[in-house]
Image (cartoon, rainbow, N blue to C red; front, side, top):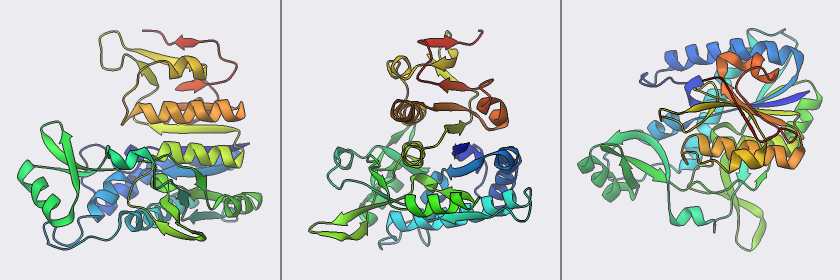
Length: 313
């Protein structure tokens, strides 16, 4: 069975932790302990988040220098390599030495005319006071929006259209390789106008769950799992009557409201996968991975589910 797993950002850096190599490595080590039993039994592709890493890389050097930073997609490629290296090493330490692992820098096609570019909404990087945000706007042309009492940079988050590296990923899977791919939503790329064979990077961020969901569909995965820091999808999240959803049909789940920058893309990616393939998708917590795959924990989205089944209050 081929399983595609999207690791949430909390698997790499927990809320409030300083972004040090030691903290990231320890969190990846914990994630690897959950992934290893699955990798021993199934074909596996792993995606991951990279939001904090990209945001801080974009501040390399002086954050207030009157110079342009490197393009955002370049930082995406750098973090794919960095995080992939850590996953390879920590997961490889728990598997037989003959089981190969490979990190593949993954370009994903986006449409330069996607409406998302007219209204950037995807938060990246740390928070700023208003004066500092204004200074960075003047220095680098960044766009900021309010995030609580402070300000964060926002970039466009267009729809992923095609995985350029699908063929080499399939080639690796055919040779029993565990593949780390589409990290951080992949590297956004588009064809240069009038030159169908020439690609260029695009300054944006693709949602990692929509990207790995597209990859799962293109690979014909049997199961698509998104791991986050909550044990299930909740209806009425944060309200007194919130309820955990244990199983749902895609149409029923899509009809419920979810936050656009948190659970919304996960639900959208899961429903797209189920509708396109007829296979299962699931959302839940890293520590419950084995039970999620067995359908005993988390939220399972399935074509043959009847409406929505809630857990006990």
